[in-house]
Image (cartoon, rainbow, N blue to C red; front, side, top):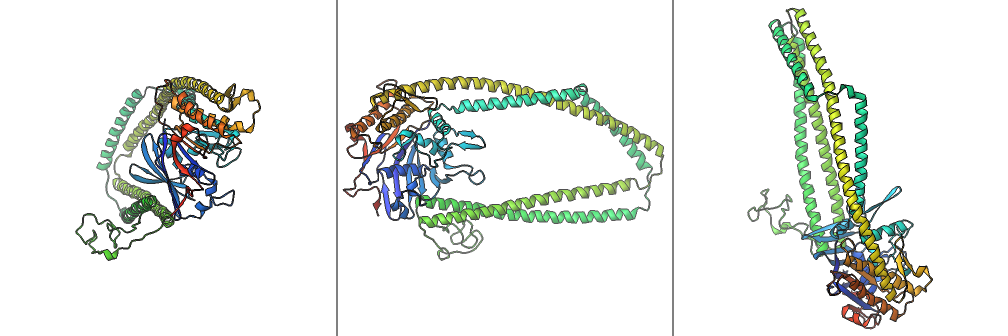
Length: 639
């Protein structure tokens, strides 16, 4: 189970900037009045984690964040901790890729998956770091691959979604993305109910059953057809070896007799023709060999160019991430041959050329130009890769041609040798025919025995395959039963605990419920679904999120990353006193996760944004950032 902590939030552009204080484990509160930017703080976090923020998209739909859209070279930078390992994420406004640091390297991944050009996306990396298995859901003809932003719908209590809906609205609001089956899957993944081990064991068992049944069917069908012909392969091999020994002796006798009774005749013309054909073939083989060598040299050059392009792209990615000066031509590169100087004498390149500092140019660009250069380089490297693949394909074709021509040359040489051997025979043909008959008879016997041997080998292979599939099925079945028992036990315990904690929190909230539990779709059923005013949607939804957080602190099986972002929960007409009462239950949810009241809770982080005067008194100690329009303190500061 992974733990996500946001350590710091930054925004930077040509016009505006923002840098948050260092955030910590536990509860962090950001307060501000309307229009000061407290929700923007939440937007920045979601955006840097891969989310789509509609006000940041200049598509003519909905309200727009003018300051951000009119800013240039702007990006959000997020410093996060995952299981105490620090990473920095950087995403430019208007771009669907995220730069991130890992092991002192700067890397970049797209947000949108494409099986050909982008099989791995940023979400894959993030989920792997959080120890959340990738989960796929088959929906008829399509497959839904859950990513981090799907799960974020239960990590972010946002103000844009109606409180009665519980789940944060998806970025694409359609009948699939917000369907009951998708919501259920999100809940199951985060709560660990959708056990990756259980479903994997089930898939392995299904595959093992299919493989066993197929192997059994093949074996039975084969035995029905060839059962009478199957013999011990060792006995067959001995019989074949004995026959081959007899054939060898007969061939040697025939060869000796032919040589002793053969003379040279006047077939020299045919021999000369074959010799000329051999010469032509050898010349062709030589030309093809030279072409292969030339193409391989070109391939090496292209491969070196590709390597250099990769290095340049890596350098530009670092520049984009650090926003420093870009040295396309560094002092380590010769301006004539564009290769590394290495440890050569001062003033000389490895090619022997002299150089001076005047031979270099340095270029300084802004962030947008950096990204244009990167895109150009990425297109260029694709072209280089295509050239490399073309050379490899051409070399492969030439090698096939070389193999073909070599085979032809061997065949002609063998023909030439045969003519020489049989130039003229003056011996007893009856004896030769007798030897040939015996050889043919023995070869027929060998051929027949080889057929039986092949059948016997195939039968043994099918039997071995079936036995191995039976063993694999037995192992898969045992693993499935173990995983199923663990899954069912964990499932029941988790739901029981969810209902217990949710019921207690909701009864102490402004809802004052008498009973509360979740149904088979994991949606709340409160007071037997009795009607309540709209303001009660806030505690109904908020306690749902707090319950999941509490369970993540309580159970190792829960995959929730113990991170919760609560943005301005004062909607739906709830009054301030009731809002404070509901927020106080955050500490109660933390307490309910502990088996012993004196125990320290696991590391977690809650980031809460709200207005002035809307916090419980005890929560003032958690305030880390304040915005105020009357004092001119906005989240975006002019440079």
